[in-house]
Amino acid sequence: MRGWTRAKRLVGRVIGDRRRRAFVLAGIFLVVATVAAIFVSRQVSIAELRHQVARLEAQQVDATTQQKALRAEVASTTDPKTLEEEARRRLGLVKPGEEKVFFVEEDSP
Image (tube, rainbow, N blue to C red; front, side, top):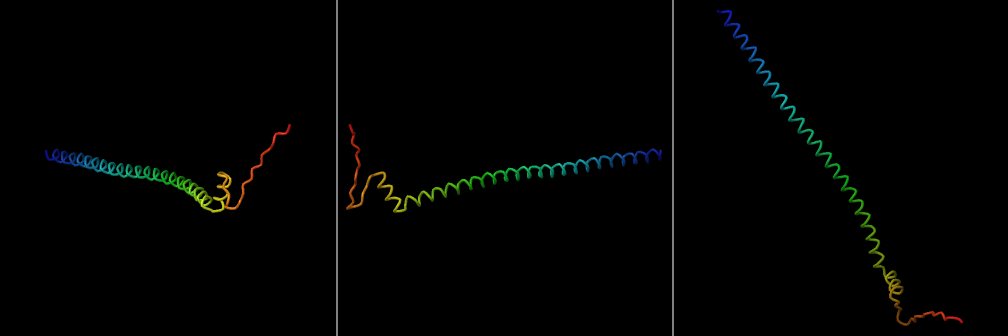
């Protein structure tokens, strides 16, 4: 009987060791899987942020170009010489003391 009891204990230890190993391996697997999932999600987030930054930089370039065009337009409309030329051309205005002359073509028979 003594041999049988020792055999039972030995088998119990082996089975207990296997269960312990299985639990340890399962725990390690869960930790590694969790870390891998976090890593992948972070990489996806980083890629999305890089795409967003590229899109915003392109928008900034467009806005800068538009701003330069608008500044040039404002500068040309606030220049007194340009304003005077436009008033003369569009509205037919003349300075005091100037005369406006219209040339009319006559129909020749």
